[in-house]
Image 1 (cartoon, rainbow, N blue to C red):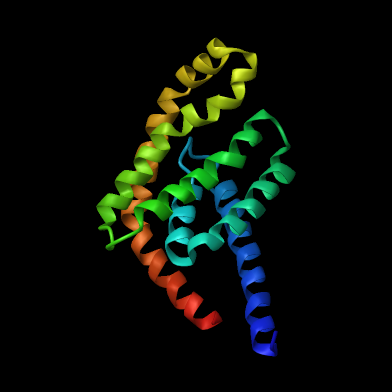
Image 2: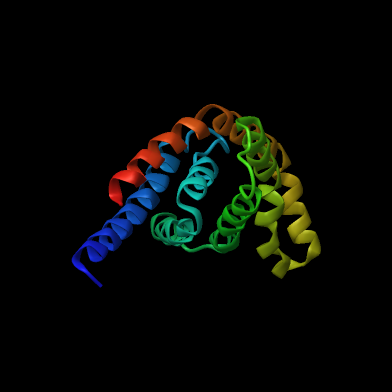
Length: 171
């Protein structure tokens, strides 16, 4: 490996750590708003700009979430929910560019399904435990879906442009 490759790889590691730290910081900053969070938007943008490298960012983010908030049952759902969202974005991004409204709709749908996805670890308590967990959270899922839709519609394109310029500067 030549010196330039090592420098680029080092910058990528630092960038992934910084992007994950930004997700945690923005999530904590927006925590007073019920179920309106920037993580779905940032994973959407990171995936569109950095492709499969987003999984390193997500792994770091999930670990940081556990360190900050504790490793409880809800944390287990983060192990599959965020990578699932990134994989869905990767699949949807194949082919031609999607308009901002399409990404907003996808992000909104993800927010609506978040509670159902989070309920899966509660199956250890039985089907009714998971179902009641999901059912109790439906109002929050509606807010989550609407928040994701608005954030993606207004911010995804400009954030992609900014991160793409940053990415070109790293190479």
